[in-house]
Amino acid sequence: MKWIPLFVLALVVRPASAAEQAMTAGQLRNIQSVLSAPLVRPVLALDPGLAAIQNLDPKIDSHLAALGAMASALGPEKSLATPDILRAYYSPDTIARIESVISQRADELKSSKDSKAAAELDTLAELGSGTKSKTMMKTVADAKKIAASLDPSLKNPAEDGVKWVPILSLRPMQFGVGMAHQVVKKRDALLKMSPAEQRAFLLKHPIPIVQHKGGHRHINKGPMSRKQDRPDDHHHLLRAAWEAGITEVPIKKEKEEKKNKKKFWKAMKKDNLVYLYDEFGNGPHKPEDLPLDVRGLADDPYRDLAGWVRDRGGYDKTAAPFAEFKWAMFFRENLKTHPHADWDEAVKEAMELARSKDAKDLPGYRKKKS
Image (cartoon, rainbow, N blue to C red; front, top):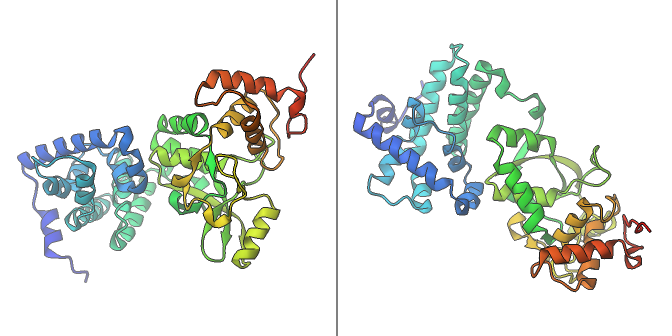
């Protein structure tokens, strides 16, 4: 017989009063409003359960019940600052309440054929999974199975055998990315998608990794895309996903290196899998100086410019190693206008330079038409 702590039982058995329900619904709307603010998105990237709160519906009893403890922890007069929301969400009372509500609702739906309730249960499971509670994980897994049995569309065949890992567990193999245009463009595209659309998109773009024997997963530049003759740009996508509040991404392990540290980095250099020049063009630096995760990637405006010029036909897409970085270095050394000073003028100069004879030795060079 499984023993249930009395305080957990009390949370489930005691019905919420009308006043408590009104407070919880109001708190939920206020919390969702706070969490939709752009400055809070990086916090959502670290706390997936908070991101799941955005999908809760105050009209659904189980969703309100799951957040009853959080509303009580915050209190009617409590400031809805992000740290307060975090403390309330991760409090033992809140976790116990969410777990018991998920378990109770899953049992109610186990023999049901109510496909409409599948999404309700699946959202509750997402909310619970963010707590990272060990006892919660089995409850969440069982709930997801029941939700998928009610609505098979919740089970994506593309996810079979796919491993999802935290974005922040992946180690970059370069120092800089183009923030202002390339990352922002990808981030904004992700923000326009629903959570389901984001997940489907990411499944089509799994992150190739090289895993070192020490357990660290390093971002690989990956295989050639079928639709374009160059490697997929995973560093920009990962940074964009993190800024969009996404916490986990699917990975595919391209290779596992069992060499010692020195031989590992020697192999990475030989295979052109690591770029050791920074956002100022200085280097090569030591691999140990690389960022520990995508939050440490720096803004390289010339890398941004190189991608912009390429996408507008300034030079051809190519599989040559570090092609965009070589173009970025070329622009850094030859442009008169800094991209941050006048982007449009820098683009104009770069397009001219890309077709000049000075660029003829760069990968993807396209001779200027006479």
